[in-house]
Length: 203
Image (cartoon, rainbow, N blue to C red):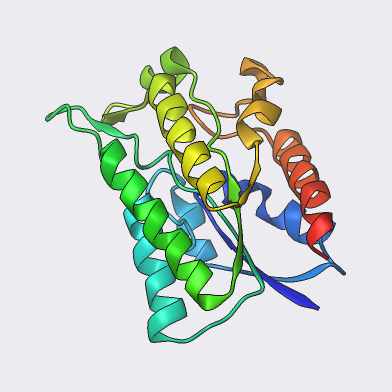
């Protein structure tokens, strides 16, 4: 059976268990270690939370180069942590040009290792809902759009398939949210089913 590594932010943590059930029998699923720690605070990228693109780059470099792990496929996403805007400085966590560099590095690495990647487009931000509930940092959907557009161009250039979780989730509107950025369990389950259906072609 093929092996599949999932690396993503807290959205992927929420749909993770549903996803694992849906692809059971198709893939042996692995993900970044430290799920329990990550679930303690979904806004802090520790443990199983992949974090921003720099963190994903560092993690994949370690496990694939330093530790020599191999997976047939890797489903990955980064973006929501990249676009965090620090309230005090007004600076975005990972500028768009650096984000693009990180994605290219990751895709080059996977290509060199003979691993087939599948990119997942970052889910939307409802500006007013998010920013009225979080004080330390802000997020804006305009940045989600810019970072998704940049990722779209890069993965297309590399011939990598992309799962449009943004458009899929957007159709459920504001009622999909359980808090400022995360989704209700039934939405997470639908996201997992959508992704599992897409990945069936890789079996």
